[in-house]
Length: 554
Image (cartoon, rainbow, N blue to C red; front, side, top):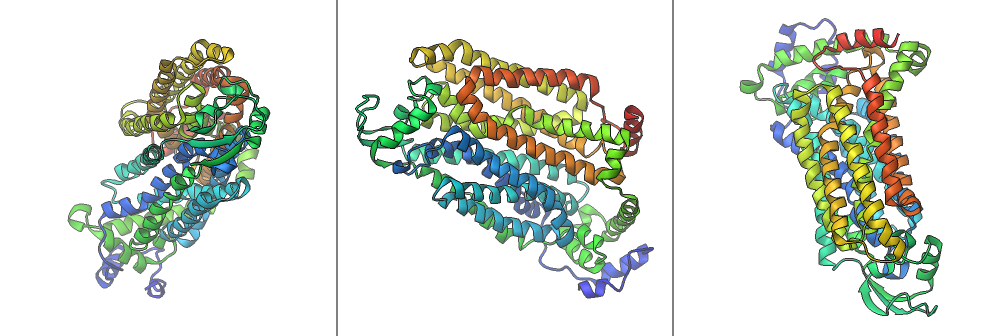
């Protein structure tokens, strides 16, 4: 079919020619409703969410000693497990879009499903921390690739009458994947009775731990960062000399291997779906585009195919005109107003991460343990944050249609700063004094932090991501939009990696009070900066925005 398509050039094509081609071309396979296409494609976004969220419940088990089937993590290694995935995601996003443009959206998602599977199996079977880093990096490539490919496939495949809601569902599926990860972590941890360990002997004779089977919390609470008498180095030295006969530290492997199930489903499902008709048109393969479009359109609801194909062909000609004028990063840096706008875009992208949202997504159970909650309870409590994320994402769809971008984002970082300072105050006033005295903090303090985290997630997920991602697609001029947007998103992933990598060490060395004060004050400062420099794009065409940006930053 693709050979025939080369006989009909899209340049100067008429509607009569398209009508005749539509009449001559059969569907390229069985009909697939757009709901089915979205359900399969968003498995990629579900995996994105699941693979980034599942680590939060796995980490408490990874902290267990090697003899108890854990990895005996340090805080630095904990940060690296999160950070290596995000560095992989940055590269996956950078190259995923290019591979998608070259080989096709459906083809790219098929490959990503295999990478997701390899990454999931690699993390679940990693015998040591170094191979875990490699597997997490591979998994990150899939996560970043999915973030660059799935929304494009959905936007290009969905009919325009429901395109906005279909793409919004994609964002909702990411947080749904995170909620699913939290729920599965909680179920597996509860079934395993939480982290358990059997200590046969303590050759040091320290008397710090009782012998026999017990909760691993008894050992974890010996760390100074959790109110115990041992520094990080002393604690790991103490673990190394214990005689441990058994432990259920391998539970983290069960959590991570479940990531392979959606990956297999994605691989099977996407092979049953059509390629993007718009990608076929971009490759001058009109007949393939018609066959693909016929599989996912209902003309009684979506209108005549020739009308849509004519729009696609005209849009493609316009894209080619823009591409002929498209300029590179060198031009952006050498043009003063574009350089300033680039810094604005990078700043907005980084603001998406400086909220500290991923310190909750990845590390909330550990933070709650610092607050005195047991590890098994903390894993279950993380489900509340996942629920609030899903609710927040649904609210975000309504907010961005009703309020201006500036209003939403400035209110977001202000609310985030207040929540983080509330967490800092709880640590400082109600938890740190008990830790200094070697006593347990009151149980309600941990639940207060959980409540503040839940409000925090509701605020962040309902506003920050929706506004930032929308504005990154709006503020850059058409002839440099691709390179400027790609640079900003790459910086977003790098900022995510830095924050994820450093947060566990900050919690261990600075404590919850100082760590969350830093993030809280940072967000309030960012709110003031946004108040001064953030542009407004609501209710304006892309052409109006481009003109205003040039005037504003020249």
